[in-house]
Length: 240
Ligand SMILES: [Fe+2]
Image 1 (tube, rainbow, N blue to C red):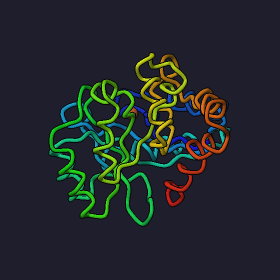
Image 2: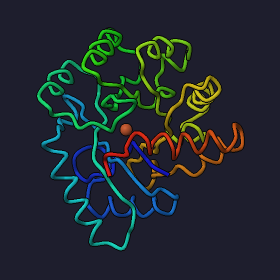
Image 3: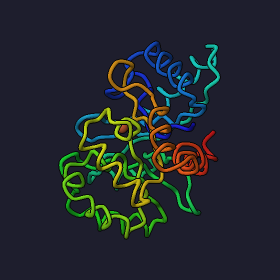
Image 4: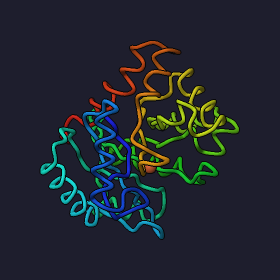
């Protein structure tokens, strides 16, 4: 499987803190059947002041440690970008690492606030479309507004967004509400990716196997393959 969303780069957000943490997470990922990971630390103004300038050196140190280990998993670098005014400025300054390409568009992984769909998101998405940038919305099934009324997610689909579900939501580890909403995305054929959003070994490990099995059982193997292998592979082809 190919995991396109996780926080395993050490010391730059609320994920892994040390290289040892990172390697332990990578080991679990391998055991889960993950062969490729795109590392996506938070870029969140006021909380995690990351740009490509902080992410790249931390990623390089992880890559070095991985090369010296006996793990065979492959890693690449992107970011999970919180929607904010800074985002547009940073994008213009080439400070945002992209997560791949999709149908001839460059793709960015975006995070909404957890309690609502932010005002002005439609204008932002239109602006991105004019720059030929496609947005993946991270874990829409954990957004309170979408959990209450999943249909509001369709307003974002109009602007060409793709949705990434968190594996733990699909398998029920994020609670009933997130699982029910994840099911809504799956039933309505609106999910494009499943990813771990791993932060640490204890509560949020890089697990995708359970989600794969749930999808396989409920919707069939082709959809599980599509969300965990084929679509992430198509997106990140140029990164590895
Ligand atoms: Fe995340």
